Image (cartoon, rainbow, N blue to C red; front, side):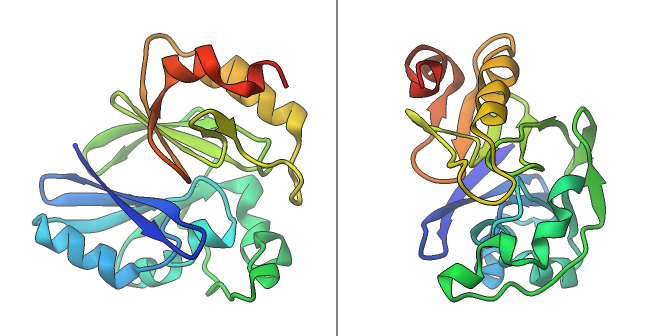
Length: 203
């Protein structure tokens, strides 16, 4: 499993291209479908899946285009209503999101076979009601749930600090062992570092 990081949208969203031989998936493509497709081809792979951690515009902007190219779009069922709503926040940024319907909706607890990799879905509401983290091998794609020394905002529609803190402390931090954490914004971190230093513990 090889992870390539791209910064998409003016919000510097961390978009991840994960390749495994000739197969690939993308996590949170804010924009840049052509760039991501070309990067996958340069690795000898084709993007077959798009994993969305939540439905804010800066994480889903290229999903429709990648879907037209043959990729299956996966997201939590509770965030599906946000895709075509002002609640995806695109309106406030003066942006538009091309509408799409996810091919696969999850509820949390599933293990998916994505590009030949077992990907576990953990429902981590708080930033949005349908926020999820994807766990693949020793990596967690945490979206806007958990950041390096920070955590996602909870003042957007369907957000809840109480739920977010529970998701981080009682779900993510409760995982056994250490993981590399690849967030939706900012630098990568590790789960153990955040267990020890993240301000959510005292907020």
